[in-house]
Image 1: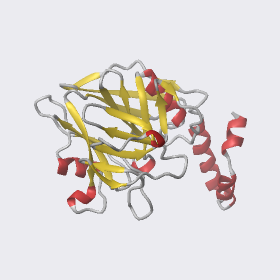
Image 2: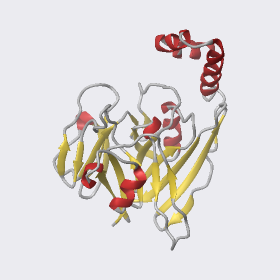
Image 3: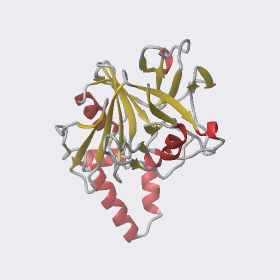
Image 4: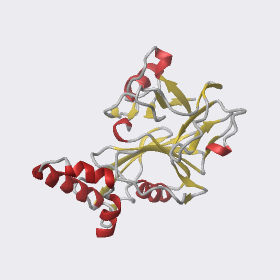
Length: 277
């Protein structure tokens, strides 16, 4: 535990501590230590059952304990034989940016999740393909935006940005890092400070899982890899997290489930929407 803290307490954190009062330092360290306590003492409720939400859609909640603030993950699994995934841009509705709920309602998506990272001006970073049209090119630099989620005529793929084939792509976004490939954790993914996460993964049986953490501290990327592999994910991609992480599921009166809205602090320029075929 001491080595872990020493490793993560880098120069920027030391600078923060130097500028804090004694009382502020105490509370900062309390939160910091309780957050990292998630790693050695983590307990995952991985055997929670999937619950039917509506035809072709299931949800599952995973609770993780061992930290001062216990994170919770909400997962939604959808059958891609019944649903399709599309890119939804706020600019399509003459908006600079918005939130997942509003963009889902405007587009008619049954589910929406935040997608691309964005810069300080709110502009999405990296590849965007929408309705077969390339809106933005691939961002080639850095080690974060390593993955592309793409929809083709009869298949979906999550690939490294260097392996992406633009020809035939109908919808695509760039994000990262990739977490899982061929059912195994991708090596070299930074352990990272636990934070609110959002992402998606593809399963072998032509299904997709969307996930978001709905609590204050969130989850580390390393823990997300283990959880997603346990759920049978063959490929997985991390989406923008922190204040951007948000997920919306529309109300379905026929199925008897209410609206689900896990909101984020930040407005966003692009989402992925799930639509009935």
